[in-house]
Length: 164
Image (tube, rainbow, N blue to C red; front, side):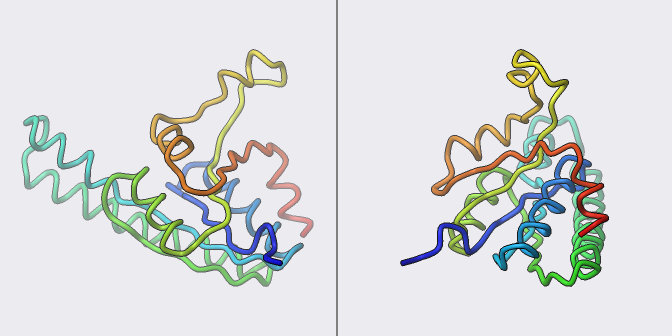
């Protein structure tokens, strides 16, 4: 019988909430032995759309895409070193395209059992949790994924990560 969780794909854009999801996955890997892959997507689809609608000229678009790619490489290297401090090996991948479709494609290609996204909440009451920040792209992933999706809202993850 296949384990419920063997492979977890984490979508990371470098935000605090996505880095919390990465740390959560590292802790989960350390405790259970699951495999973790972190993907960073250069949102070239949005850049292309801005260029086509003439909000951005092609040269500026190319510069922004290069900076985003460089940021992604740096963020993924940082994540690998974070995981290494906890003696966890993770895979990383830099992709290019529409964020939500690339996350789903990466999960499908890797045969992930779970996609993790970072999320934040604005307090502890139910009304605040219903307004918890999940981006439009996150909603696209949640609605279109072919596997389960988890939104990590663990506020104490930094403390848990330190004591791991």
